[in-house]
Image (cartoon, rainbow, N blue to C red):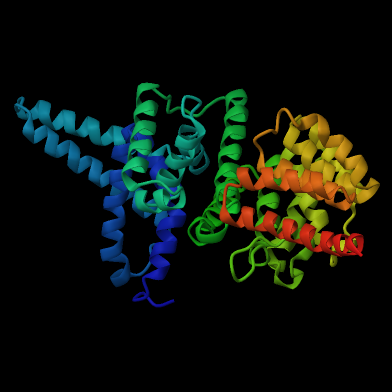
Amino acid sequence: MSVTDTAWIDAALTSARPQAVGALLRYFRNLDTAEEAFQNACLRALKSWPQNGPPRDPAAWLIMVGRNVAIDEVRRNKKQQPLPDDDQAISDLDDAEDEIAERLDGSHYRDDILRLLFICCHKDLPATQQIALALRIVSGLTVKQIARAFLVSEAAMEQRITRAKARVADANVPFETPGAVERSERLASVAAMIYLIFNEGYSASGDTAEIRAPLCEEAIRLARLLLRLFQSEPEIMGLTALLLLQHARAEARFDADGEVILLDDQDRSLWNQKQIAEGLALIDKAMRHRRSGPYQVQAAIAALHARAEKPEDTDWTQIDLLYGALEVMQPSPVITLNRAVAVSKVKGPEAALEMIEPLAPRLANYFHYFGVRGAFLMQLGRNEEARIAFDRAIALANTTAEAAHIRMHIDRLMRDSQPRSAKAGK
């Protein structure tokens, strides 16, 4: 590695950021101050590291520089205040330095990062603010990058992050390490936030895919970070496995024009086998703990798809059973809709259609419901009903890629109906 190549500096700063910002946050008790101190430390790193080479522990180096920034700030503030007698001034400064040093010396890697993640997932913050705050504070993405990924203006995203920081400040969030019960509850919130970040990237398509797909990679990085902190927690293993197995298909999910390619039609040689192997190893390890949870079940479903060399090799019976278990854990019409796809493979489209009919009132504005319903009706030869369902799906499409995919089905309906019309006219 050449010290003149700055790529390694960017990687080191990104990797060290959660620990360093977490430790600095513990001193300052203020997100803006901690973030500013870290940025100042990074600027010094960009000057020092190319000349002197990487420090043995980049995070510790950044924390120490951040501490020095804090001490300098204390000194500046002291000089701006009316001066007490010399002995008192020296005593106050020593006390301030001792307090900062004590906080540094008492730092714990795991607790600092957890505290940082927990603050970003504070219960008073809506999910959109949690995600924005985590991407800014923990991941270090710029406001411009986050705004671009979420398709909003930079000013709007800046406002969203500012509101989130203000809410955290107003909530008087405790900076002590939470107890076991609260830690368990907050851990679930952190996992959910990481999952939401991933889904924001995974759901991207067409023109947005290139700018939003990096969110998937960032979510995987955060999941791995969480897994290092909770190495024996099966649900975190399951979450990380799920993200890896889903992202492994990224290169095969869209064609050259950005159109969606369904799972059965994907070129499986494009799947990332390294990510699949890591995901399969994690879910196998998680299942051995025999403490199943929603992320593990979803990862197990993704693993069955990943293990199938050809679409016809997919174990749809087992997928149906896993979705059944997921319905018990997290009752949801969307999960039932997903299960219906497996049922259609095992028992046929009529049984699947019967399963989703009761979902209509709750999924009346859900694109995928009408897309799936139309597909089942088309398989049953009920083409006019299928067309109506597909028309509704197009009206509810969130992206041009989704709409284009449904139009492909409508075109197929038209092709299938032409021979029958011609025959009827003879």
